[in-house]
Length: 146
Image 1 (tube, one colour):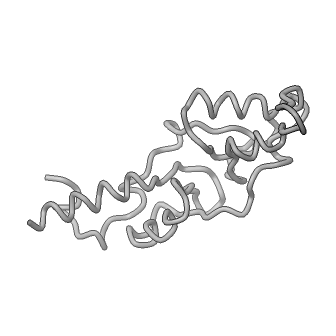
Image 2 (tube, rainbow, N blue to C red; image 1 turned 90 degrees about the vertical axis):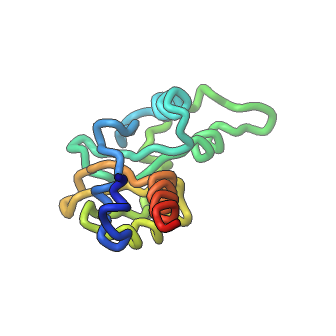
């Protein structure tokens, strides 16, 4: 039996669905964009969380933002990648969830993002909740009702 068959969707928390921080690719604020782009390309993700030196969540960074920084008039100026730090262009106004948030709160946050970061009350990074995880739980729940 799946988790959603044992519990109602309203009883499921973000902790039940999230991917833990140990399994999530991330970069740090002082990394150069060159490193961030390498992490993004190797992981296959379009964006990753950005953490400070104490592993607190401070934002996200994506391929599009990085590539826009290197876009010149006639070519990509890739030499800029080693001179710019992640903290200079990362997105800091991001939605964040707690492990204790409900399924519905998670669903509302992932509507506009492929993933939402999960952090504790002190801001330490716990993992991510993906739109895929939400949709899988919905599919299981709807299938069990047939």
